Structure formats: C-alpha cells, structure tokens
Image 1 (cartoon, rainbow, N blue to C red):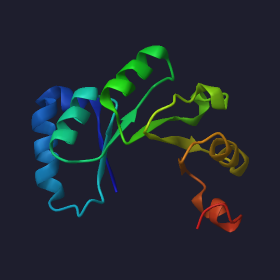
Image 2: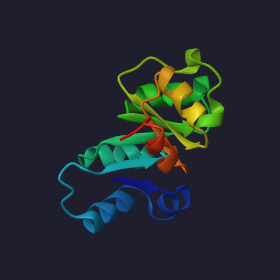
Image 3: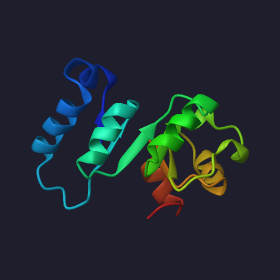
Length: 133
C-alpha cells in the first residue's frame, strides 16, 4: 500500500506532524506501507518512523538527482512522459516507478529500460496481455 503526502498538507502542518498523524492513522502496517512524496522533508520524517520511502520527482534533472542521492529512497517515482531513454535513469540502490502509463507498449518499453513498477489506468489490459499477473 502506498500512502501519499500532498505538498499542501505537509506544508500546512509540517513534515514531522504530518508523518506522525499518518502513522497514527495507519496503525500497524506489517511492513506493507510505503510513504511517497514530492517533499524530501516528509520522506526524511517517514524514514525516521521506519517507513520505506518513495521520492516523487517532477523531472529527471541534476537537481532532483542530487536530492535523490541524499535521500536514498527505496523507490524513485515519476510521470512516464519524463523518461525518453534508458540512459536518463540514475544509477543507485533504489528502484524506479512510473505513473500514468497508458499503453501496453509503453509499459513494456519502461520495463525494458529498468523501470520496476508502472501505475496504469489499464491494469486489466496488462493482465489480459500477460504482462502482469
């Protein structure tokens, strides 16, 4: 299960309080919850609470790479349209996930480039085509 932080929510109450409230609301997660966010401070707080973290990036720029390397997230997530070629993926210990994947061909291309996860509006098609189980 992914639990996503919105920029506005964490800015309004602060990253520590946001994560503390999320942890209270989520209860015992049995290791099944990953907190994902565009906000590095929220992810730092989440890691301090023992959650795996996913860093959402708006782009695959050098600035985002620097933040990613500092954070050391479990997963780096991005809109699939920001990735144009495999060489754009940064080397690191994290896994990659892409959202808003709309075609089977694009999902296959992303997987062939080393993206581990896709979020899609067409999961039933991906299952029917044997691309996911």
